Every structure is written in structure tokens, then in C-alpha cells.
Image (tube, rainbow, N blue to C red; front, side, top):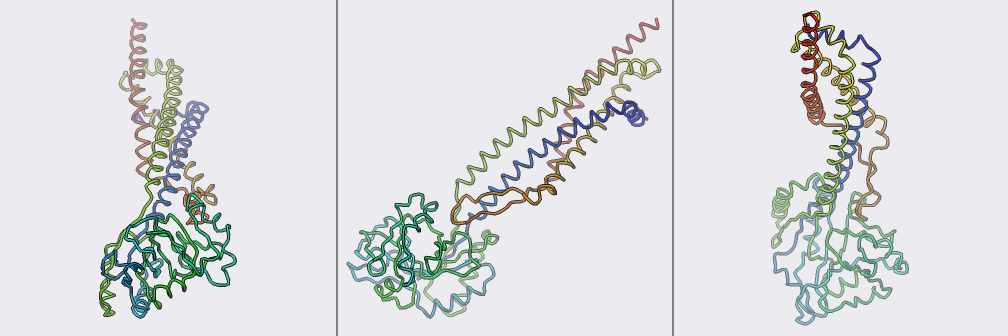
Length: 418
């Protein structure tokens, strides 16, 4: 009975009903749109975080970490033989969880010394590309290196390493093919092969790989094989370490250690916290504005309907009955308006802006041009929680003035009858 009366009362004044619905729908639209925009930004940042969180596995001889080549003591570093490298690389190429792998040559300064100083990346250059090693590479590496002065370039590097005392270096002898993209430098085609930048490198120099191989008497070997897991497989790092160890043992290769580690950038977490805090404040302000607009609108309407409430009181409706009817009207209006606003917002977010989405420029130079992150569809429980909160606050706030007005009209009516 109460629902029928509430609906009939709503339809009695169509203009007022439409105005209320439009007001509530507009408020909910802006609220949902603001909330989803914050979600979209957070998703973009989170995606960058996922891309930046990388899983790495290294395969290296199980000798001491300091048993590198040292000219002063004529000590040669431990290496993986060329035959073993070929077998391992063939095995890795068949592993679907690997994004890329690279053989490396690691050693300390040829001048001697055991101290770990500034890590340097030495990248190989083909002989016919030597003339192209120029300051242009500085510009291409500037974003990654933060300071172009940290990049050492020398046209004589092919014949001389010219290292300072105790500078450990990392030489990337080989990196993977076109399937590898994250943190990969093409350097405008200057470097061959491509370089996998997955370690914290403070300086970069360009040398000839073969010159280093000859100097170290390596003959095709390497000090380790570095592996990068696919992004979606990073969480299974421990499992894949064990799997690779088993496969190496199955190849009858001994004397190798398999280790793994993850790398991530803490700046992303700080950025997410900041955006979330700012977004929460903005959304909360919009939410308060929405509640205030709805309450003001309904309060005006309540005062406009004093005569109607009085008329209903005269035909036997008690204050509790009038309160129930009016709050039912409020519930129906807010529900209809909120649903309409949410649906319009979701349609706008998922259809109208589907071709655009959020274009999130990647935060890191090694990832290239960045990617397009689609605006996420709102999670149902967020929508439901917001709706219930709006309903709860509106009904609680309106209950007391509604009850007082209804009671006052009944009392006035009884006095008039006396």
C-alpha cells in the first residue's frame, strides 16, 4: 500500500520528479566519473609498476663471486664453456616462461683490484658501425642515465678499454631477438647486438666485444647467462629457478649455480599513494557535494508539500505512516536517479572513451613510447557501497524533519477540528 501511494505521489507532479531525477543522476554521474578517473590513473601507474617489476635468473659458475680475472695476480675468472652455453641457450629457447636471455662476461678492472666501484656497461659495436658511435647516443641514453656525462664514448674503444682502477664492468656479449622489448636499447641501430639494461648501471662505454674476448682468452665462453622472465611469470620466480636447475642437471652440466631476484622501482609505490590520497580527497568532496545537493533539493520539496501532508493527515494518515510514505518516495527517486547516473557514466567511460582510454606515457625511457591503458569498468561492490551510503545518509537526515512536519500537521489539524 505504501509503495503504491508513494509512486502515485511521485507521478502527481511530473516536472518536480524529472527535475529531482536529473539532479540526482547528474550528481551520481560526476561522482562515478571522478572515481573511475582516479581508478584509471591508479591502474596506469600499477601497470607501469607491473612492467617494471622484473624477475631475473642468473646461471653462473659456482666459484667465489670475486674470482674474476685480475691482471695483477694473473688469475683468470671462472667461465661457462662455449659448449655448455650452447646447450643451455637451446634449452632456454624452448622455455615459454622466458622473455629474454643473454650471455654475459663479467670481470673487474684489468689493472687489478678487488673493490667494487662504479658499475659500467660495455656494449659491443660492429666494426662498420664504429664511425657512428657519436654524441647522438648520449641523447638517446640521457633519460635512463639521468646525466649524459656518465656515458663514456671513445672512437678508440675498439682497440683500448682504458678503464680506471677497480672499475668493475659488465659486458653484454649477446642479447635476444625481436621478442624482447622491455628495457631494451636499440640506440638507433648503433649497437649490435642489442643491450639488455636490467641492472643498475652508472656508466656506459662502447667497446668491441671481440677485443675483450681475445684479451681474456675466453674463446666464446661467458661468465654467466642472464634470464628475464615474462612479466606475468614474475610471481613464479622460485618455481622457475628450480625448473631451470633441473633442466641443467638433465643436460649433464655441473658446476653451475642458478639464482634469482626481482627488481622494482619504489617511486611507483610513492606515486600510487600520492594519487590515491589526492583522488580520495577529491572523490570525497564530490560525494559530500552530491549528498548536500540531494538533501537540499528534498528539503525544499518537503516544505513545498506541507499542504499535501496536511491533506493526507486529515484523511487518517498518522505521522509514522506519512514518514514511511515520504521516505519511500525519497528511496525510489534516489535509486532511479543514482542508477541512471551510474549507467550513463559507465557507458561514457567504457564506450565513448573506449577508443581513447587513458594514455599513460611510460615513466621509464627503456620502455619506449608507453602504452594505452583502458579505463576500468567500475567494480560492482564499489557502486553498491556508494549507493547504499547515499541512501542511508539521505534517509537518516530526512527522517527527523519529515517526522516533525508530519506530526506538526496532525497536531494543527486536531486543533482546528476542536
